[in-house]
Image (tube, rainbow, N blue to C red; front, side):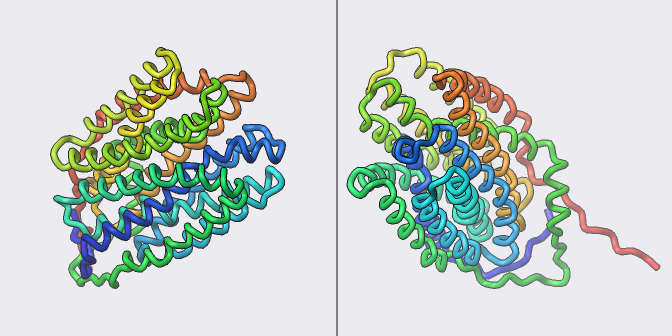
Length: 408
């Protein structure tokens, strides 16, 4: 490994508290978007595919913008990226409320919110954690932050459902826009001191870091697994409320289900972070993906009741974002932390391509067949694939050598 630039360290407590609060807001708000599918499509007279396509664009925009947001955060610090992200988040939510055409809805809900999430979620925050938390506690710290985001999901879904029922779906989005602006003051807690380097320190260029990562098989396997993660969680998060309503279950069952996913995700992500300090992370990831497929199979086989929905939600919640700490910890472990946000954003791009496919196919195939069954089956098969794909991942640090000086 090459030496890294020296920097004055931020307090770990400060980084975790502010980073966790930011992720709580950014992930918590987006987790409840499925609650808006039926109110918006019914009020605007749109198909489910229109709504699903906008959310799909949101996920792909998040993925495309993620590496660029990561580059800016690695070079200029997370603070500026978070400020811009907070402003875009509020603007996107307001646009989501005011859009009267499918194109306008896709522009605000899709492009603006996608770019906002790229600058306010894990890749940017984890870059700060990687630079300011010791390696022996890094996986744990990432688990704590991911658990906070999960708590945000548990907290925000009932709140968003109450806002919709009490204030109407448009006013609920305006209120969430104001809440998103709270990310800006929290960003001051992640404002990093200027980094300085010594003459004998070899720094890697952005281009060299990208070339190195993309040529490394383990990085590509991580991307393949993360594609599956995105497909599964976004399909379930966006379409399950409508799936349950189609099966004639009460509306509050869907709200409780999403809240349970968020609640149990708190425990799952934290435990994954802790286990990542002790066990091979590739085994943790393989187990998570395989267990997701098993859970979906059982969910589809047993009679659909509120109790079966709640058990499924608790199990899936435990496995929901528990992939995030080990995946990002492996990236830092292999490549170091100099370009942690950029490489984390690049892996997350694959996640968001999967998210695009999961949410769009859910709407497309439902409109074509009147059922979500095919997408459930795809999610099962992909989980098995991801379990196998993570096994070849090598977690040892990559060896770099300093360029030899030229002689006259």
